[in-house]
Structures are given as structure tokens and as C-alpha cells.
Image (cartoon, rainbow, N blue to C red; front, top):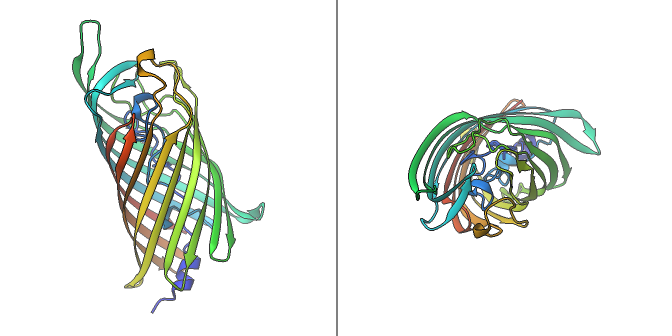
Length: 330
């Protein structure tokens, strides 16, 4: 019989930065955000499902973390809703995206400010298909664009984790660089064409007696202007929470739980046409999480599958996120 306490202490996983990449940077127009809310393209660099569960917890021991991830997202918006995309005004937009992201993190053996210090990056490759009616001088015209390529890379210059009994306190900064392919006037763009900065903080609670893990994480995104469209997406806050129960299965642990997320734009967009108004947006959602953890002589292997569906939305796409993550810690 495996000792839960030993496994849980040893298994100090990492926080998914990608926001898939932190981890997936953009999506509909770049995977990352395929769902966020208002903002240009109805999307942002924020991806629900990157912060809250045990597999996303910041590392609390020295070493390396390798994390490949897959995200599938399919969404649409009501026919009457207008959304600005890459300099175009669209309506009835629908999008499908698949992304594979490869992430790497390194945690120093030495403490920094009394915490475990981690840095790293996530690199996404994105496949997009976007359909919409596009406004033109002679009336709206239906268009369908497909594109694939490198997405916006997420850099993590600093992530800190402090352990205190059953609690772990985490904070960090994620930086989304406009490295993805982008073209003015194209519906499907793997890149967002602007920088995003996401300071965040959270707390993780592990109870070895109840075999229970709970987490709460939140932050705020600040975005620069898209130089091609002169459009600036307003700042927005996000919050993710999860609860997971752990059970022994073979030589490891199976985790079963749920995650919820909330995201709200707190600053109006600028640069859009007046008829779109300030175009603020919000979104909430919830879904199940299933995972498996396998400790291996000082190394750890983890798999996780989660499905998040949006329950409420404003000025954003409506759809579901399906994540599959794997973590190898050594």
C-alpha cells in the first residue's frame, strides 16, 4: 500500500503556465483565448483550465518539469453579435481550434525569498478554422479561413512557491509574446499580434488524511495595442478553483474532481467602431477533471483530462474546452 502523505509531499507538480500554454496562448485567432470575452476577436490570451488543479500547482522542489499538452476548442457566437477580427467586423462567427503545446520549467535548488523559484516557457502549435460573415461596402459576405502555425509563446520569468504545512502559496508572472503568425484581414490567425502580461497568485491545500486537494488561483491580464489594427483589448481578471479527491490505483493515485472558472473584463476596449460600444465581456464555466499520478523513484509522471463548458457569457464565443495534459517531473 502506498503512503498517501509521502506521495503527496513528493509530488510537487508545476503550474501550467500556458495560459497552453499558459499554455496556449491564443486561439481564435489564436488559441489562447478562444474564449475569453470581449477583446479583439472575442478572444484573449487567457485559457480556462490552466491554473487550478493539482497538475497545475507550482513546483516545490528543485528539478525539471516537461509538459506536453493538447487542447481542443470549438465555439460560436450568436448570429446578431458583431465581433472585430484582425481589422474586420464580423457576425455569426464560429471557430474550431486544436493546439499542441510543449512546455518546460526549471526550479532552482536554492531558495529565493524563502520560496522555490521556477522559470520556463510554453510553445504552442495551432490549427484553426474560422467561419463568419464579414461586413463590406457592398454588404456582408460569408468567409471561411483555415490556418496553422506557431502560436504566441508564453514566457515565465518568475514563479514562486512557499510551503506552510498543508498549504502552498504561489505567485508568478506570465508573459505572452506576439510570436505567432498573424495577418491583417485574415479570420484565422495563430497569433494575437500583441503582448499580454499576467501577474497571478494562488493557494493550494492538500489534506493527506482526507486524501483531498483544493486550489484557488486568480490574476489580471494587461494587454498592449495591436499595431496592425490600432485596437487595444482592455484588462481583465480571472479566477479558477478546483476540488479533487485522491484514490489509490495500482502503484499510483487516481484523482477525480471538478473545476470552475470566472473571467471578467474590467477595462473597456479601445479602437473599435463606436457601434460596438466598450465591448466589455465576461465568462464563467465549470467541468469535471480526471487524473492519474505515478511516482517513480524521485521522478513523477502525471496525466490529466478535463472538460470545461461555459455557463454564462457576454461579448464572447460560446463553447467547450477539452484538455489533455501530461507532466514528467525529474
